[in-house]
Image (cartoon, rainbow, N blue to C red; front, side, top):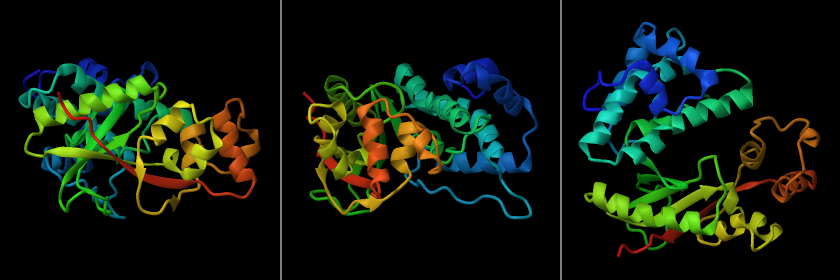
Amino acid sequence: MTSRTALNPKQTLDVLGIAPEDRAESIALLEGPATPAVEKVLAHLRSRLGSSDDSVPELGTAEAPVTEFDWLSAMLRFSPELLQWHRAKNIPEAVSNATLADFGRNMLINRRVHNRFGMDTYKWLNHVCSGRIYQLGRLQYLIHQPVASIPGVEAEEWILGIHIPEGGGLGTAAVQESLALAAAFFAEYFPEKPVRTGNCESWLLDPYLSTHLDPASNIAAFAGLFTPYGEPRNEPTDAVYFTFRTRSMDNLGALPRTTALQQTVLNRIDAGGTWQLGFGYLSLPCRE
């Protein structure tokens, strides 16, 4: 794939990991006319490819809004250019495919959450479209410069934001393998942005969680990799959304309590507690 025209619509959907139920509407967006709003998003995506700027501006106005579907249409059209950029950096095809498949994964999650075609998390995909995030084994890594102070991290130092895509557990072997892959990958493909530290911002790092789950559980082991920093921040809906894939805090009593994690999430809310976003950092493995 060495040119913008190297992907036909089916190939684009394959690379993006778009599920069968989302394909017809994706093709309609991809093959439909590029409206001024779509062209505006395309210009934004092209300007940020390879950039360290992670901002997502409001591109529309009340009179001429840029909608969720304008973003999706532009991202679909932009995918061959993004893949071409990956190829120019010699990023392995397997890494490119795993990374770009986050598009289809988020689209499928949207269907589960809202029972419709679309993607309410399209702003997250700006990280993929800018070439700043990569899936390496079980985890995703966003190369960035932290806003908040992290112990031992110098001003303007590059670090890896560690994210957990849906799909699979957090077994110790898979996590350690992924961390080792990340250390080697970024050293080889982004040598101009040396990294030695990873950070994670997640409800899985809420101190409450590790004290109310089996210490031998994969989640407790994952949280234990990180040294806490800063103060946890109240994010009441995060645990519910990522555990049950619903954004509603209504009728929580109807949600399943099959697993220990589901029980822990709901029991805390039932007792009047609030789930928090925890912050932690770790040193990346040294390359051999």
